[in-house]
Length: 150
Image (cartoon, rainbow, N blue to C red; front, top):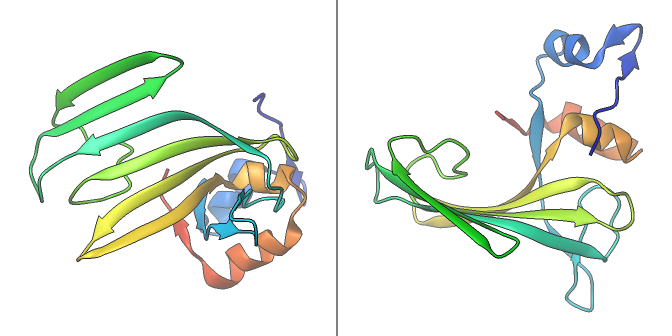
């Protein structure tokens, strides 16, 4: 997806994000309709396509992490000390990349373990949220400050 250049009150988007103490991406809860279809977190459309799948295999607090990426019949695996992108800070994690037919926004459904609980949420870039024209999401983001680092 091509990056758009936004101006908010005569500031660039990056200046706006920095000035308001925001991050580039934030977490949104997942929603499922009555038919059991996963809904896009930006527009609530039920027609989403999953693509790349990332698996992070790491024993609790272990330095080394096995990171496997499957995409278009290609699989790449790395075993190193970098767990960049792992939705879990201490254990295994899973990321499924989605693209919505309704708003064309790319999101990531993440699954992580934390203190015996499984967390599931979408990660959406702040810029994509603006592209989706879901201003209620913008208000929720400011109100709840449920942001995460990119």
